[in-house]
Image 1 (tube, one colour):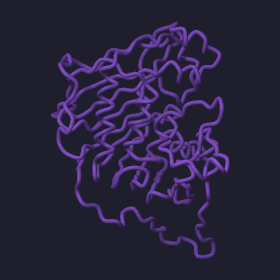
Image 2 (cartoon, rainbow, N blue to C red; image 1 turned 135 degrees about the vertical axis):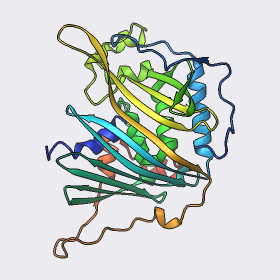
Image 3 (tube, rainbow, N blue to C red; image 1 turned 60 degrees about the vertical axis):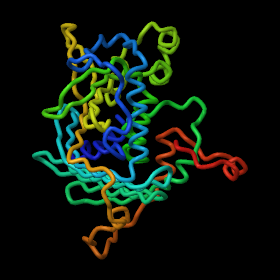
Length: 331
């Protein structure tokens, strides 16, 4: 168990606010009812533009917000074990220099895991604790933002981007990776929301399943059971009716048992609550503070993991001449 739980951070990353209330009107005339029904795991659901338009409004509002603060509840299924936790998120500023801080605590009956990501717009600090053991690493965010995709690189599942650009980058990666269909009216407890379901875009899915690429690009669907276990089959996003904030994000897989019966499994869910927009946030929240030294004889030394993240994201540094004249990208 001790070797499996640290990979939860990778799973959370590899799976994967508005500046004011109702800045942008929601799509017109959605049909009331529950979130869109799931389709068979062997086909890709057709998607109209309405859901994609909604996600564009969400991204615009998240990008425009002077600041956002929120608390997080999350649950994840890891190796057949449900794990839940809580966290905090703050972001401030706009564009490539945006600052953010994400803290997640995960607890089971056997262990406790915590990871803290702090970004000042240039450097990302990653502090992880597992059963009292700590590791500290840094990532050069500016270098990642200036990187380019490798030829033939595969798409990264959206949760990676939460640690590279906060909520705006997460929402943007969802829009780039999934086609979103019909928008329907729904409720999360007493909160009125728009709910929309997203299925992998064919070009993205073909990269995950290259052996089925010709069929996928021809619109013949795909056998999603061939996706690796950490890759979801679909995503469902629940967006605030008034503020277009993504209050709940769900990642789902469709599984088939020995008798051929299919059922849907919720892999990961993140819920955001006590959300505040445009509230002042102390600059100190975005300045990484090393934890108290546990063992003075073995000081906690940071490891530069920029190249490791480049490799995982299948990106590379641009040639020196191109890098000199190329503005920083938005990944």
